[in-house]
Image (cartoon, rainbow, N blue to C red; front, side, top):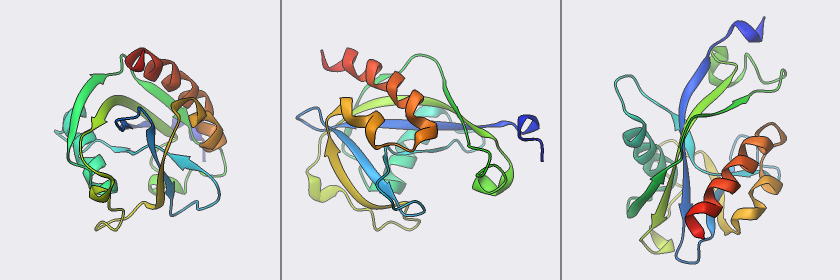
Length: 156
């Protein structure tokens, strides 16, 4: 299989900040080693980025009480490592091209419920945003480094 011929999946990512400006991360159930990530997912046909972001956030975390702080400019991409191409997303994509949003969580932690109809995370926590590149899978590390710079702009 020539991965380079596969398209990129259209996706969204959501940076969720609590009232202490810590970032929500979840531990994926399909990769339960010590890797964490922010909520993210695909964009459905005829769905705009913001609607997709709100839907994915609710589907993965049950979080609904948010205020949109901003849309991160541009699109962010990552390529899957060769061993995962053909496995993830039924083999249809080589990576993701994502639109990211940053939101403030207005609810209480007890609103967060990972036991959703299609659970993706088995555990969650709040971390300092500058720790994000240290907890993500290696193939998304550069993407997360770029996102840390964007988060800084909103916090400062």
